[in-house]
Length: 286
Image (cartoon, rainbow, N blue to C red; front, top):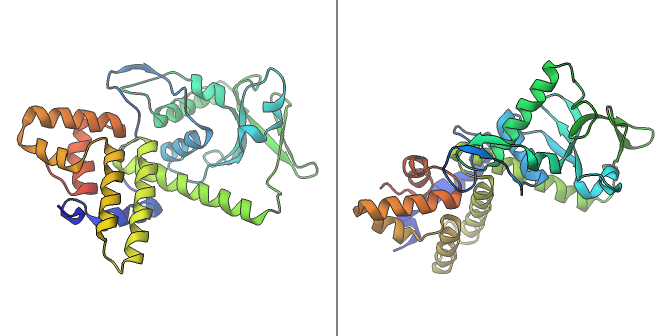
């Protein structure tokens, strides 16, 4: 069976168009489906910022300094700190990655959008309590000021300094950072539109780019080698082959098992998987 039989190439190409204009839907997440207390102990700073963008609908919050670039992270006894431009409040902010990973929220599964939402909820409570610069002592997060004379960010509550490397003249490095930021922005939008985990959305954006390159090199057509490669990519993305999904359509038990397996793999619900993700991305209706 050719890949065009079950995969809408136009839809995969449209993933990039979607990533540039946004879309509807909810946020993604990790495994499990039991409602209760969860956290995101492995979330990366870049993933947290992408989730903030999805949650806020701004898509312009961005990392200024990663944890390995901040002076505070290098201080003995200090946590891992990163600095962002917070588009929601139009200010620079330093955030402890350890703190983000410890935030507890209630949901059906562990997911990055939920930790971003809970972070905003905590921040809102702080502001209502008169703590406009972050938590009281800057132990978890704080607003920072950038000093042009020294090239450092300074915490308003803690007084800690955070080094600024934005003045680098390495054009190629800056270009790579900008490309990375664009990628996470696209992934955040796809995650929001299809209600899948950020990890899945990043794979979707990568796959969309890969197919576009294949089509451009093949004069708008996918070769047999292209199709074989994409079959493998799709199985990696969903955890099952498209043939397995199609075969389950006539067996209610097999269908439920396959949907549950794929839902956990891509970080969404079986209902969203069946009603939105499979029909719109793969052209499959069960």
